Image (cartoon, one colour):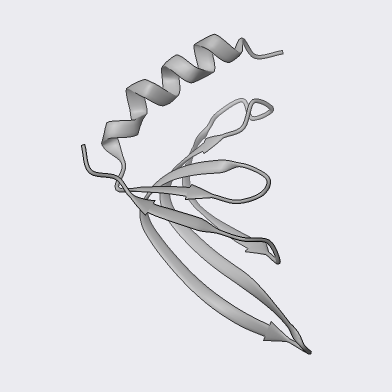
Length: 84
């Protein structure tokens, strides 16, 4: 199991290197590029996010750095521009 204090320290260290904080129901991401699209499926709306140069706040991942990732969700998405 990952030491949460150590993971928080890593988060504090990498935070200034990114432009966006992206929050979904399942996890948080830091990314340098974000593309958000709302999609319709029958009468439902879902969000498709494409993130580039990513750090995923996920304790189960051996490596939190990702070159890119795609997220599909029916839940709310919060995107904040980071200004350090």
